[in-house]
Image (tube, rainbow over all chains, first blue to last red; front, top):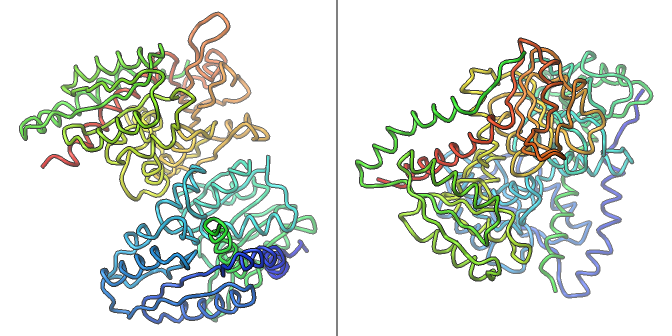
Amino acid sequence: MPKLLLGKPVIDAIATELSPRVAALAERGAVPTLAIVRVGERPDDMSYERTALKRAESLGIAVRRVTLPADASQTQLMNAIAQVNDDESIHGCLMFRPLPSHLDEQAACDALDSRKDVDGAGLGSLARVFSGRGNGFAPCTAAACLEVLDHYGIEVAGKRAAVVGRSLVIGRPVAMLLMERHATVTLCHSRTDDVAAAMRDADIVVLATGRARAYGAKCFRPGQTVLDVGINFDAAGVMCGDADFDAACDALGDEGAITPVPRGIGGVTTSVLMKHVVEAAEGVVE
Amino acid sequence: MPKLLLGKPVIDAIATELSPRVAALAERGAVPTLAIVRVGERPDDMSYERTALKRAESLGIAVRRVTLPADASQTQLMNAIAQVNDDESIHGCLMFRPLPSHLDEQAACDALDSRKDVDGAGLGSLARVFSGRGNGFAPCTAAACLEVLDHYGIEVAGKRAAVVGRSLVIGRPVAMLLMERHATVTLCHSRTDDVAAAMRDADIVVLATGRARAYGAKCFRPGQTVLDVGINFDAAGVMCGDADFDAACDALGDEGAITPVPRGIGGVTTSVLMKHVVEAAEGVVE
C-alpha cells in the first residue's frame, strides 16, 4: 500500500504558517480580506463559498461576498470588479467560474487587478506563472499540488514529472510550477499517443483531466508519487478521482504515494487561496 | 545522411505568402512598418539590423530606426517606446536585447503595446503564448521552428517533442507552440537528470541551450527531426549549433532530418519577424 498523501495535515500546516502572519498584519491594523464574486446561485459555488467562509474565519481572514443575479449584465459584472479593484480594504478576489454563458468570462477575469487575482484567473497571473515576471498568483489548485509535495518532503528538482491535462486552471500552470522547481516535465493531453507510457516514465504524476477512474494499473509503476486533482462522480454518485485508486495503489506499491479523492488535494486548494490572500495583503500593507 | 532542413526554401515560401498580403495592404493605403529600437551600437545588433533592413525592403515592408545612445536613460527609452505605441503608422516593433545593463529591460519590454510586440518580448505576448488569449506574438525564433516543421510537412500532432532549454525567448514558448499543435512536449533543462534519454525518446527535438556542439551521438536515434536553434562559435571561431552536427547526422540516419547551423533556423527568424509585422498591420488597417 502506498503512502496516502492526505490533505488535512497540509491544511493544518498552512494554518500554523499563516497564523503569525495574520497576527502581524493585525498589528499593523489590517485584516486580510477576500472578496468572493458570485453570479447566480449554482449549488457548486454555494457549497464552495460555505467552505471558504469557514476556512477564512478560522484563519482570521475576512470575506466580503459580492453577489450578482444569474441574469446580471456584463456591465454590472465589470462594475463589481472595478469596485473590488478600487477598494483598498480588499486584498484578494475569487470569482466563481464558469460564469453564466451570456457573460464574457475572460474579459471579467482580465479586468481584475493582478495583485488581487488570488486564484490566477487573469492574463497577468498567467503571464507570471509562465514567465516568473509581473504580478499575480498561480491558480490555487496548481499551487496546492506543490504544497502537498513540499509538505510530504517529496523531492521535485531533477525528477521527471508527467502532467496529464493541459487546462489553464491546472495542467499548464502546474507544469510551469514544477519546471520552475527544476523538474523535467512532460505535458500530456487528449492527443498524447501513449499516455500510460508517459505516466510510467515519470517520478511524479499529476492527473487533471476530470475523467473518472480513467487511469489504471498500466499507467503506474512502483515508487511513483501521484497527485490526483480530479473531482468526479461515478455512475453511482460516488466521488472519485481521475485515477482508478485501487489499481493505482496496487501498482505503486509500498514505496509509492498518492493523494486520495476525497481527502486529498481538494481541501488544500482552499487553504492556498487563503495563503494567497495573506500574501496579497502583505504586499500592500505598510 | 538525414534530410537537411534548410532555411532558404522556408524564407522563400514566406516571401511568396506575404507578397499578396503586402499588396492588399498597399491597396488600402498602408505600408506595413517595423520600428527597430536600438540602444548603442553593439556589433550583433548592427549586423541583425542590416539583415532585417534588407529582408524588409525585399518584402515591401518599411523600417523606422529608433536609435538611442549607449548611455540613454530609462526615461529616454520609455519615451521612445511610448512614441512607437502612439504612432499609428508603426505596426510592429523590435527592440534589440540585451539592453545595456543600467536599463530596466523588462519594464521596457512590458511597456510596448502587445499588438506591436512582434518579437514576443512583453508580458502580454508571453501570456498569449501560454494561454492562447489576449494580444501579442510568439518570439520569432520559437515561431520559426513551427514554420520549418510546417514547410517540410513534418507532422506535429500526436508526436513526442523534447525541447532542451527553458528560456523565455525560445524554450518555453516553443514548448507551448508545439503543445498547442498537439505534440506531447517534454521540457528539458540544465537540471534534467538524463537529457540524452529524454531526447532519444522524442520524435522532434528542439535544441536551444547555446552550448556549442554539446549534444552528440547518444542523444539521437534514427528517424528523428532535430531543430537546432543554437548559434554558437567554437574555439576556432567557427559558427556551430548546439548539436554535434556530424555525430547527429550519423545517428539520425536517412530517415531523420536536421536543421544545419548556419543555413537553418536563423534566417527564418527574420522572415517570421516580417510576417508578424504584416499580421500586425492587417490587424489594424481597415
